[in-house]
Amino acid sequence: MIFYNILRIFVILCFILQIRNFNLYNIKHQRKYNEAMTYLSSDVCIDPITRADLGKFNLCEKATIIVSENPRTAAFYQILEDFHPCGNSRCLGFTDWCISNLHWFVIGFGGFGILIYFKWVDHQRDILFTKLRLPLSLTAEHKD
Image 1 (cartoon, rainbow, N blue to C red):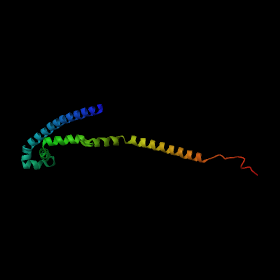
Image 2 (cartoon, one colour):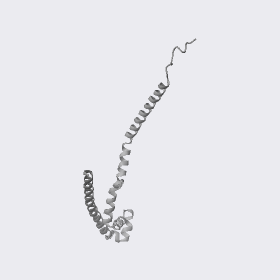
Image 3 (cartoon, rainbow, N blue to C red):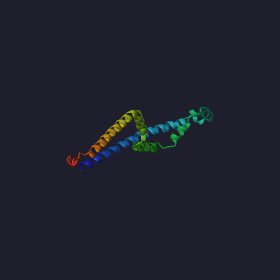
Image 4 (cartoon, rainbow, N blue to C red):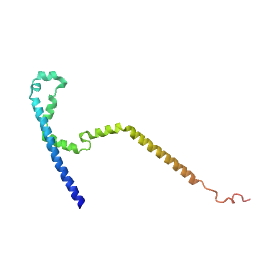
């Protein structure tokens, strides 16, 4: 019974924290949205000659993508990304950690492999010794 009460409190606290995170993400995305709208209404994006002169340095396309999504929707999707196991580039960080510690994995697997090999050799030796038997009777061989 106490376990379920602790679990309920934990779920309620997580829900409250997610509401807080949603508000923070909403503010962040609203700010980006406003900045993108301001940038799109600037001379850089309105004037086609200036826009063409900028070439690949043109940020109008990025601003258009930001404006095309509602800030509340973007905040909701960011909350969902927090719940995803690989969200917020966690899998990339884990992969980088594994690659940076690859030598320890190789040493560990090699040591474990050597341990298994020596245990297998001991097992084979034990099998060999269990098949060896002393003669049942020494007198039975010298019967003439």
